[in-house]
Image 1: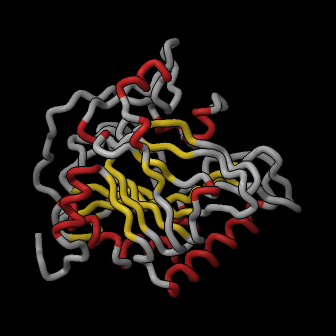
Image 2: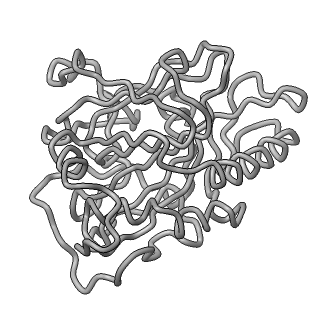
Length: 288
């Protein structure tokens, strides 16, 4: 790791490795946030013409042209160059390099909206079962585009859960559900959950094995977040990606890998996403 381009100090990097998450209030400045919000607003306008979800736009119940309600938009790096510029040229890949080493791969760029007045809850789950890799460096980086308060259903994480087991995300009938079954909740310290809040520009990072979820947003204010996936370049996917944008797998810091690095972990394979993927919301609600 190069110390010349470090963003995180040793205490912050150590906290992530020990706890499995990190919260960096106000890391992204107002210029970037303004550009990202404008790009997100354009997507909302584009969604007004839609009457049902597709592989890119995931609509919440009650979505109309006059009152759009979105759960997720995928492939942002292909939909608007602002998102790819941010994913590649902002400080985020440098932060990731501080945590996983100098060679960093981009995986995906999506948005979750948590619309005001009922934005959907997300059940407890881990991310690595959705996209198993040869090692456990994959992480999700969330950027708050507005202030996030406890009333808005913010991200909740279970500290140190990244050191525990990778749970099955299939139901008793063998169908993919995208969440951890209630029967396994006694193996998770749910009473230690931490809500990650902060002003617009706050960045949260969670390890691919960290158990996390969120409550409904019943407040009158939406909670739009940008979600970017990164991993160490020597973490290679076992399965087709859920969101295979044109930039999936590009190196955004450092050099391409010469070897795949393997962690000693057993990972159950998810369904084959090569035929298309909806969203975690659809799977957890059994819509897929």
